[in-house]
Image 1 (cartoon, rainbow, N blue to C red):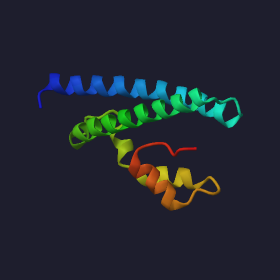
Image 2: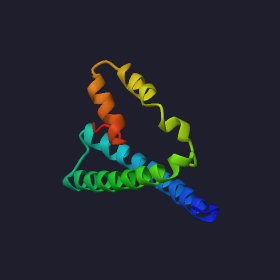
Image 3: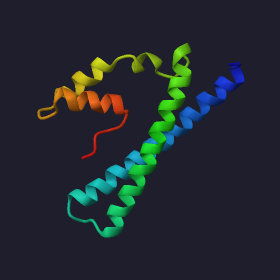
Image 4: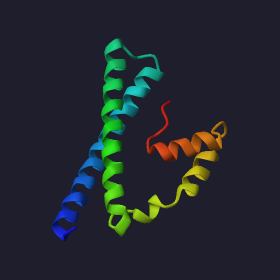
Amino acid sequence: MDESALDDLRNELAELEAAEAQLSAQRRRLHQQIDFGFSTAETRAREREVSDERRRLHHRIDSLRKRLQPEGLAPGASDLNAPKALVSRLSQWEGISSEVAEAHYIGGEELEQ
């Protein structure tokens, strides 16, 4: 792959990660509304839409990382090779089994609350 194509992929990855961060923040706010009893049918529907969009973004991000990773070209590529660190970080919380922590890592998405 030529350098300009790689730069395009890196830029797209950065844009998708920024969009995912915004969706995650929006999803957290919606979850807080739902958790604290301030939800409506509209809030729950919006949360489902945001979660679905976030899931689609995660799949696209994972795809781009896989394309960039073999050559060590993805930002934070060394972090992608450390599943045990993630599993042990999740396992520190009481009630999170190692199976759940591994499923979280493999799925590449945050656990639903």
